[in-house]
Amino acid sequence: MIKLVCPDCQRQNEPERIYCHDCGARLDRSALAKVAPKQEDPEQTQRRLKKMLDPGRIRMRLLFFKISKLILGACVAAVLIQMFRPPEVPERAKNIELQQITFDMENAIAAHSTAPLQFTETQVNNYFVNVVKNKHAAVSKVLEFERALVNFEEGVCRITVERSLLGFSIFHAISYNQVKAQDGTLTGTINGGTIGLMPIHPTIMKYGESLFTDLAGVLDREKKLVAKFGSIDFHPKVVVLTPKAPGAPGDARPEPTAPPSATP
Ligand SMILES: [Zn+2]
Image (cartoon, rainbow, N blue to C red):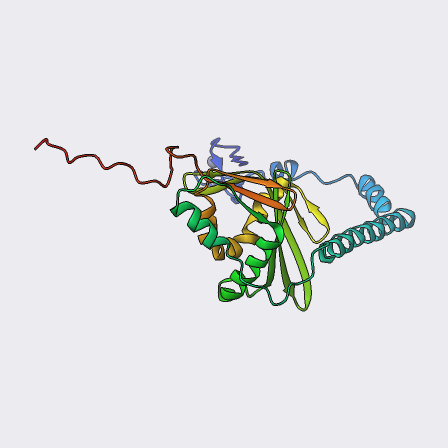
């Protein structure tokens, strides 16, 4: 803040004042003009304007924007095209008999069987058709849920969901490896994903896992059943569920009941 010093009494006056607040002497306001904000050198301004308005430069800049827009547009189009391209998936099955997958799993658990259960990709997919058909209300209506599919490869389980958006089919997939049953829930590591034919990096796919929430909800009972098994092994087109070894931690076998405590 600039102060105007009174020539008579040396009082520092506010810059708005014309006369000294104390003695009424006229203040020298010319000091204010000296500290006024520095103006840009007019020559410099002219040079800057000339540079800005140079027709060659303008043309270059417009061309640059045009090309950038073109490239960006092409990229967006390429991504969209890839996203809407359907992957190779089996035809929709018709008149599927209800697969007794949950029944088999429940029986194996109840009987404390140690024999591994084996299901093929086709059996699981047929099962999915029925489950999802029966619980259609629970799956997303925004991006209309059409169907879910699994693919089993060595150590890897891929889940694909087909949805329809304004009459177009969109397929999105997520794949897991190291699928294990832990404390009654299934865990796995996301190792990839796709939207249409466009691959999605596993790190990004972590955020895309929410695209499968509705399916996971519908298959909650099945997931819990599978989690009761000791190991879940994926092989090409086959999944093998091995029951927990008898006496292993978390075995479904009832624990021998301890006698009631005698302490009062
Ligand atoms: Zn004064």
